[in-house]
Length: 114
Image 1 (tube, one colour):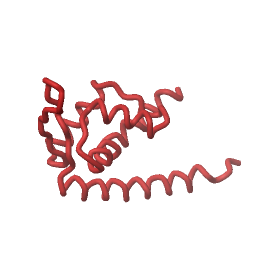
Image 2: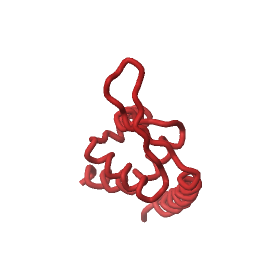
Image 3: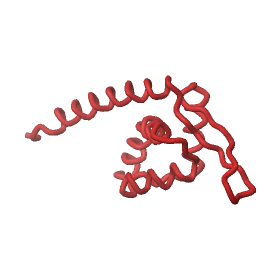
Image 4: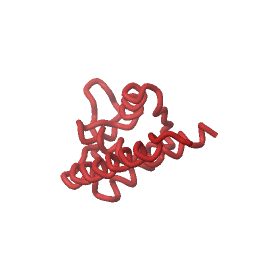
C-alpha cells in the first residue's frame, strides 16, 4: 500500500519538479534522471518511459523547448531542454500551490488523532 501512495504523490508533483530542473540550466533526459535520483535521495527513481511523457507534455504546453546539440567529441546529438519564460512563471505558480498544499496537509495530519 505504501508504494502505491508514493507513486501517486510522485506523479502529482513530477511536472513541477522536472520544470524546476529544466529551468536551472539546459539539460537532457538522462541528466534529469540522474539529478532527480541524487537530489531526491533515491525517492525519485524514474525510468525514461516515465520522464519523456512529462517532457513532451511540458513542451506541448509551451513551458519548455528542446534543441538538438552535438557535444564535443561525440557523433550523436543530444536533445537539450530549456524552460521558457512562461515555464518559469508557471513553475512559480506550481510552487505556490504546492506550498499551500503542504501547509494544509500538515495542519490536518499534524493534529493528534483521538
